[in-house]
Structure formats: structure tokens, C-alpha cells
Length: 199
View 1 (cartoon, helix red, strand yellow):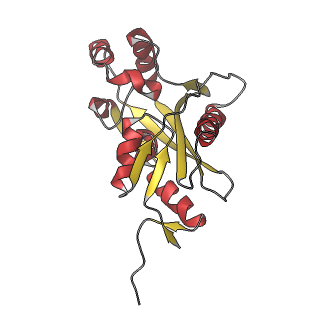
View 2 (tube, helix red, strand yellow):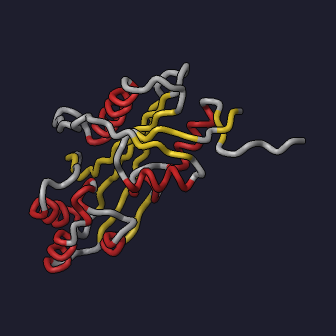
View 3 (cartoon, one colour):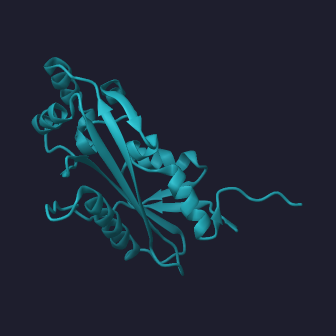
């Protein structure tokens, strides 16, 4: 088992950067130029997987080293309809009205690759239930700016935590990167985050 010390993150997401650093990893950020196009023919879960893979491939094409490259994508699933990042505050308001008082599913897919291994892909899904939100709460949150770079128009780790009544599944999936599944996947590739003790 080899110790993994550093990775390349194919994303500008501050949340994913924070989560990977929380594992003790040195992280180099190399944002993907992939545009995350909508595709109504794919389910939200499939779309998250496609986006994660394409982001990975985009950044892999620019790398010559042997560091592990990590890409991810998060999509909110409301009755089979994919909610990405809102276009503007009005779009965030629309999303929040749809989420109010009901369940939705958050899918976070990730793709990783390190030479000479093939690409490994996985996706985690967590059910989230919102409190009933009044219009003033929705408008105030939308105007806070927090929803604008987040799938579904909210962030569970910020002010948006006050919107969430409960979750069924992995918190980090909702935050944007399923840490537990990622660490287990590394083990399958022969990597550990800690050195084994000498015996």
C-alpha cells in the first residue's frame, strides 16, 4: 500500500479543496474548462457521472506527471429533473421554492485517475428534506449570494444549513464530495492516506 500525499483537483470549488485538504493531502488546483452542458436525455445521476468524467479527461490531457487527478460533479435531483447552479438570484428563488417542504436527492459523482491505472468512477446519493420556507426566507437567502455557485441553489455547510430539516445519507455528498467513498476507492487503487506502523 502506497501513501497518497498529493492530488490534482480538476475543480475551482473551494468546498472540494477544503474537503481534500481535511484528509491531510497536498492539493494542486487545475480547474477544468469543461462547460457542464445540460442533457435532458440523461438522468440527474447519469449527468453527474458524465460531468465528473469529462472534467477529469479535460484536465488529464494537460498533465504529464504521475499525481492522482480528481474530478467531481454535484447535481440536485427533483423528481428526475436535474438542478445545477442557478443562473441568477431569480433562478435560485425558483429552485428554493421547488425544494421547500419536500425531499430531493443530491448526487455527487467523482472520477479519479493515476498512471498506470484506468479511470475509476463512483457516485453517491443522499436524500435531503427542506423545512417549509416562507417567501421572505427564500428571497433573503437568494440575495445573500451563497446559492450562486451551488447545485440546487443552496449550500448545506453555510447559511443554507438552516433550510435543511434532515438528511438520509452522507453529509459530505451534499457538501460536494463523498470523502468516505473516495478514501475506500483509493484503497482499491493501492493507496492509503497514512503510513502503516512498522511492526
